[in-house]
Length: 167
Picture 1 (cartoon, rainbow, N blue to C red):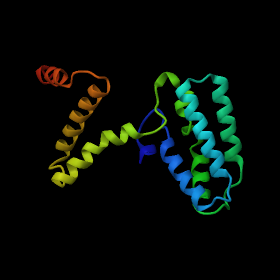
Picture 2: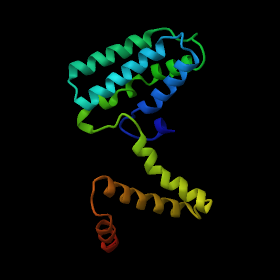
Picture 3: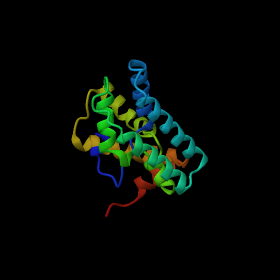
């Protein structure tokens, strides 16, 4: 679903990748590929925290290419599916390193937190009464969440919007 959403680019969630890789290592400790990919992702995350140079990013991408060029199609368990998916979306794995000026997070935890309110609303009321109601709710949540994220006054912004004349 995330990769189908219109956007200029998509970042695969590295937290989810690490969880999947951990399960693979536990299920198939004899296969070295998940361990190597885990180490690479952890190195990339450390580089993200420290700040990276283009040369360091290239080294990370080269390591990824070497790992994805290993033939894992006949490996045990879910490893082939992950290998195939990562090959298909290799440009989305370390996007957070390639564009440091865009402040792309390496995981989608903030996005999941943002939609949690909608899921709770649906669970409590069972549904939205109309498409317009759902759209209005999403718009208001977007404004509130954005203002909170930027440590700005939510109330002042809602008052400003409410007092702005419609065209």
